[in-house]
Each structure stands twice: as C-alpha cells, then as structure tokens.
Amino acid sequence: MQPTHTSTDAHARSSGEQSSSGPASRGYRLYLAIEFLVLFAGLPLLLYTQRYALSGRIVLVLAVLAAGCVVALWVDPAFERRRMWNASSLSKHLRSMLAVFALGTVGMIAVFAWWYPELLWSFPREHTRTWLLLMLTYPLLSVYPQELIFRTFLFHRYDPLFRDVRTKIAASGTAFGVAHIVFANWAAPLLTGLIGLWFARTYAQSESTLAVTIEHVLWGMLAFTVGLGWYFYSPAI
Image (cartoon, rainbow, N blue to C red):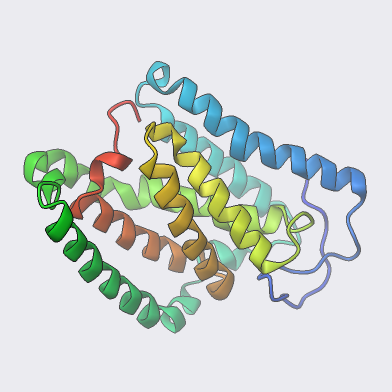
C-alpha cells in the first residue's frame, strides 16, 4: 500500500480525522479510489467466489488484512494511534450504546416471537456447542479485526476521498455490507450494511475502536442468539 497522505493539522475535524496539510492531488485520489474498490469490492467478490475452496480460511484472510491495516496506520505519522483502542472515550458513550442495545434487544425478540417463532433461539438451542464457540471467539477473531478495517483504517486512509463525515459513514456502511456477500444470502449484506452505518456513526463520534468493537460484539451476539444466526454463519467461513 502507498503511505497515507501526510497530515499536519493537530486538530480533529468534524469527520473524526485530522485535516491534511493541503488538498490531495488528483492522481493520489485516483490511486486511493482504485485501492478502495480493490479492497472493499474486488476482494469480497473474490472471497465470495472462492468461499468453498478456501474452506474455513476466510477468518485467516480477515486477520491478515487487519494486520496489514494496522501496519499501514502505525507507520503513518498523521494517524492518532490512540484511536486503535481509546478506552477513555468509552465511558462517554457506553450508556447511550447500552440504552439503544436494550431497546433493540426487546424489539428483535418481539419480532421473532411474533413472526418467526421457529427461529427464535434456534441457533443456541439446536447447535449449542457451535454457538458457544462463536460467542467465545467472535469478539477477538472477528469483530475487532473488522472494526480496525472498516472503521479505523477506512476513516483515516480514505480521508482524501471522503472528506465529509456523512460520506465516510456511508462508505463504511456500504463496504461493510458488501463484505458480507461471502455468506451467500440476501440478508447478511443488507442487514450488515444498515448496522454498519450505525457502527460508523459510533466510531465517528467516539474516535474509539474499543467503543465500536463493544457495540459490534453486543449486536452480533444478539443476532446469532435471537434468530439471525444462520444468516451470518457458514461452515465454509
């Protein structure tokens, strides 16, 4: 990857990133646009077509991609490394995150109990060991790498492309949804695209990968448990 465009302004903009020392060149923006399409459209399509050939190695691909993003951010002097964790920001947002999650939990349980009672608790009830394994490994092996890639890296790396915070949120949510085509059903990319917008909003407000990771873990575990589990799980993944 080409090094990120250098930024010297010490003050964070409303987009949640530092402003650059000057407008990026047209050639550099074109390079970033191509890179963005390769990583967030081309790679998901490749993984989708090769999901069975990879046979369980997609988590490894995710880990390698996340590691590459971390290295690119770490060597970029314009990146504020505290954003990779930033626990101090969590307390400011945790109460509102939990309040929204509580309402969502009640709503999702009500929807499945009324319209899809056969799916309610089906994953933990019918495949308890698999569900438990997912609950244990999901936060570290899946969620944190995803948040590093789709929020922390995307927001900073593509700042010259998406200068406005709303545009960054839209790009992050869209990329997050497209990445889930690997599950080969309509629900996964649609639902993750929508929730990805919310996660991107949280990151933009908190500037904390930890905060958005916790939020992602909560909603992901809820989805696996309540009735959406099989839309986001495949033995091939």
